[in-house]
Image (cartoon, rainbow, N blue to C red; front, top):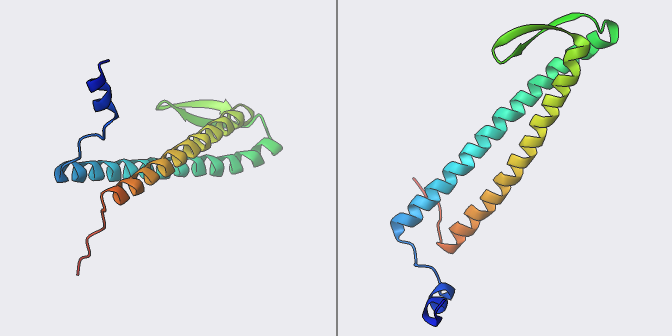
Length: 128
């Protein structure tokens, strides 16, 4: 790398235009909204798993060989409670782990957005 190329690489990046700032800000907000939506969706799914597990735990204690039905990939299959409960627990725990990861991503993106707002002095418009 030549000395002029090295000096250019160390210099600040080209300043963003107002339009680029606006586009980046909108994009970052959209990403946050999409993450929040996905987190909400997965939390609801985990809650549904917990609700079903609460019901099935009673059946598991009383009659583990009791028939139950489970929808897998759009197909209703017959299983026993003792077969379904471990799979549901695994699914619920996996969903909760994904929610945790997405929450971390959300916090990181939120911090990036806050830094961007500070850097470009972005403030919400007051409507009246």
